[in-house]
Length: 109
Image 1 (cartoon, rainbow, N blue to C red):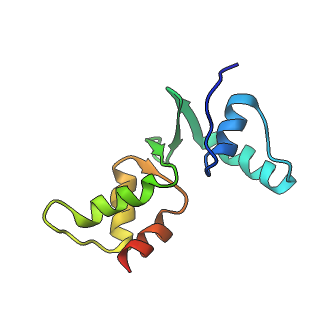
Image 2: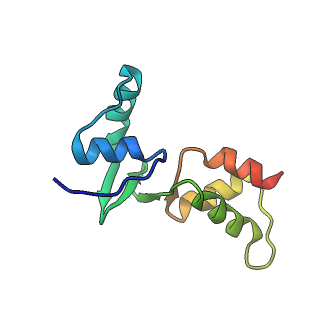
C-alpha cells in the first residue's frame, strides 16, 4: 500500500479510489468515480488524466488553475485570448481540471 498526502480537492476521490480502492458513501458519486477513474492514472505521486487521444494531462489542483489561465491570458506580448482559447491552450499544454471553462470565463470578465 502506497502512502500519499491527499489534499481536499476535486482530485481526492480519484486518488482515494486509485490508491486504496475507497469510494464515496453516496452511491451516485461512487458510480461516477469508479466509471471516470478509468481515464486517470498516478505517476510519481501525481494524478494524470488520459484524454481522448491517449495523451496524459496533469491534473491541476485548486489555486493553480487560475495562475495557469492568467499566464496564458497575459501572454508574452499581452495576448489577451478569449475564454475558449484559454481553455484550449491550457489543455493542449498538458493540464486538466474539470472547471476550466468556468475559471476562464471568470478571468476574462
